[in-house]
Length: 63
Length: 377
View 1 (cartoon, rainbow over the protein chains, first blue to last red):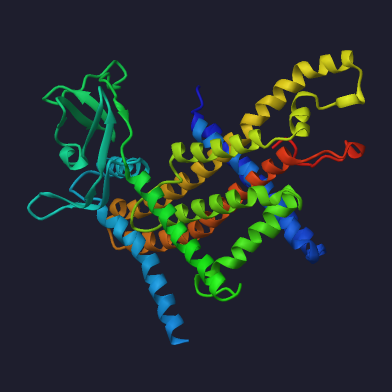
View 2 (cartoon, chains in turn blue, purple; view 1 turned 60 degrees about the vertical axis):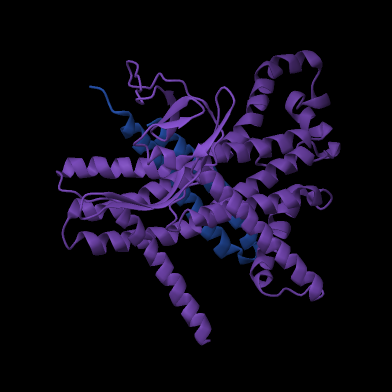
């Protein structure tokens, strides 16, 4: 049986979602531990999230 | 105090009006659920594309006539010489336009050369085989970009004047924009590019940030434009970033690409590693701006598709549930999209600054191992 490509795209997006969730969660923990590093943590978090998001979109377009 | 409340109310009304006006554009006819779904899909596809006329709303009136609100735009073609005519000649793609002895027809928003009857020939995959003239038209997206450019120029030239008049104290619009400009300088440009060289890149970073942000925000207004969700626009922006990165690259930047190990290894050792490493580094040069263009394009397109699909729910439900549900969901997504519009402009600027930072860095050769973590973005 052939699996449609949209299923693969969906799986990739689930992965990307979990990844971004983990980044957000860990960033929260880091900020709670060191509130003075808020700015730096936020920047690093956004860059990492943006990169993972790119993979998610690539999967959607391939799917 | 009262004035600000009125303003807030006005802004809220405008935000709510967006979905309502969008909804007006579709024509709910008596069709089966499949027909309506196909029509919504076609409508969304049409919205995502660039267009030769600035169409704000169109509907079918009681007599069954199609009514279009908007204005035509100039069509400029290079096809055996320059051909310039108004897009009103196409009558929204229904008629053949004639200019200088040639006939043109719109098919899926692209202009094809046809005979006087407007026949379009198709190949086996239903792609038109007609000649496509070089299209340099002022389309809807071009109009929006020119408008945004002029608007930015007007705002910032005015701001510069108030600064000069009041001795560097922000007044009016400057009160709003000064913190943003300072944020880009102090939190994006300086940390990524460095104290010494940031001034060369700052004008570009500010321009690209406000340009993308304004275009993203215009995409949420009832004008129905989708400029940053057009892959050609984002490609052009990314190509500019790539050119700046390449042409301002220092010796160390190019050395990092073609000779990353330096004196750490004898040449015969490097040879084996470089067969793999150098092509990857060269690919990385192109992948960085490519990721930039795909990210902006995909985010904005996805936002528009989600928003318009939610509005389409009204026509799928066809009961009292549809309206409030669609309104609530699209209102919430609109608010998220306002955030995304800012976030995507920020990410684009941030990553551009990061790439410029790589390009302009001069290695302290003592600390070769302490390279930035985000080297291979």
